Image (cartoon, rainbow, N blue to C red; front, side):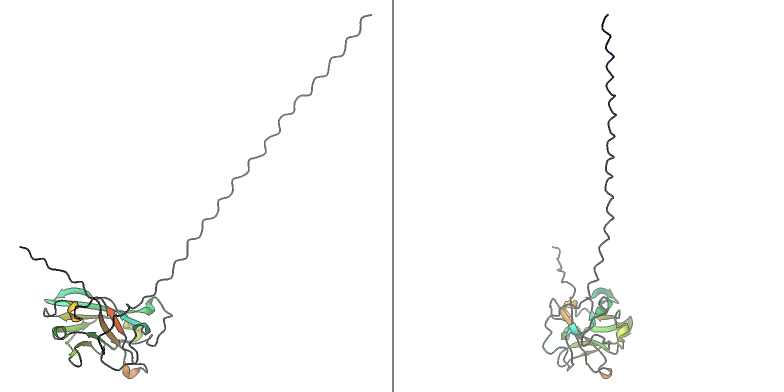
Amino acid sequence: PPPSPLPPSPRPPSPRPPSPSPPSPRPPSPLPPSPPPSPLPPSPIAARPFAPPPSGFPWCACDEKDAGQSNLFLSDPVETQENSLNKYCFTVLSKATAQPSFSGRCSNMDLQKVEFDAGEACATSLAYTTVDDVKRPPFYQKSPAFVIKITNINKPSATAAGTTICLFLRDTCPSLRNVCGGADTCVASLFNDWAANSVRCCPIVSYIPEPIIPVILSR
């Protein structure tokens, strides 16, 4: 008899479907924004280092002349013209505004008086002064040197800052630079009420006069 046919070979197993790819890793979460830097504390207001004052200025025996020991000092002047006079205004400033912890021998001084070192030509050209826009007659001393004086200001320490003091000078003193003999830095002195304080303060402070502007004559 003919040989029996061989049984059909079994089908090869169907290939397994490929394993799904693992999910892509999530992108990293964005870092939280950096906090803004803390603002720097305000720089303390400081009085300008003063130039050596004229010998003896302010010509009195006080206990403390060092501006570094005082809470008060002067702004540089603002120059304008008024009533045909040269007007120079200063503002009293306080270190305590930006530096509440400031300490010094005269760190809480009241304001009784301000004196400006001046030559004879400028002291005698003083028409009048104002304190907070209140007009006062001219006052200056002649000996031992010429000094412009603004007295009886009577401001306690808490309200001294912001006081405005103006000098009104005739044309015989055409520039505030002439007040201090043409120097680049001029000096003044602030006084507390000596009768009411154990420390007699007269800190010497500096200010810069207006620049000299050359006049070019046309030909």
